[in-house]
Amino acid sequence: MVDEASERACIESFKRNDYMACIGQVLSLLAQTKSSTHTLMQIVLISSQRVGYVAGIEQFGPLALDIASGDAWHRLLLEFSLGIRALPDVLNAADSDRRRCQAHYYSGARFATEGRASYAREQFSLAAALNAPCVEHELAEHELAARGRPKAI
Image 1 (spheres, helix red, strand yellow):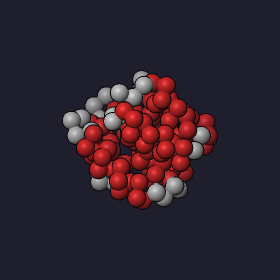
Image 2 (cartoon, rainbow, N blue to C red):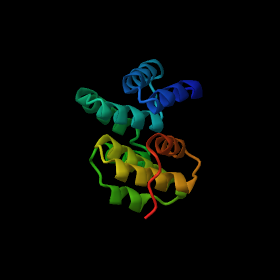
Image 3 (cartoon, rainbow, N blue to C red):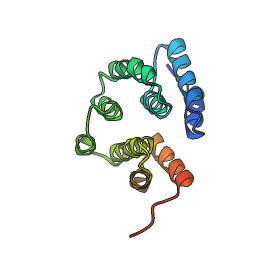
Image 4 (cartoon, rainbow, N blue to C red):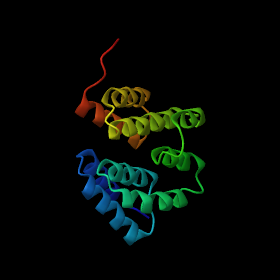
């Protein structure tokens, strides 16, 4: 089982854009505990994408999907992050504010990774507006503080 302090350290590395440290921390935790959390699986995939660590994505993607095999929602989010599923699939399955927040945050993360800043900010704003009790809300707020909120039309 991953302890809260270790998970928080990985999240903080991710928030600082220290993607290599984040990847190393998550992989070390996996080796030590033989377990992970959904958040850690997502941030290691996003970190790997952002640094172009294709081998890491190819190695960790199937492992993350296997770990999430018993949780249809988290597996769907991972499939979205891996480019296997489309955003409409995720949004259609999001049946609570928490899940909608997660869907919008991971969509924003994907747009940010692709260099589509205005779309990323829009998705982060949608996630933050839900004020849901999840790590993704915290991450969306952090992204908006770092990138600036979208301008009203």
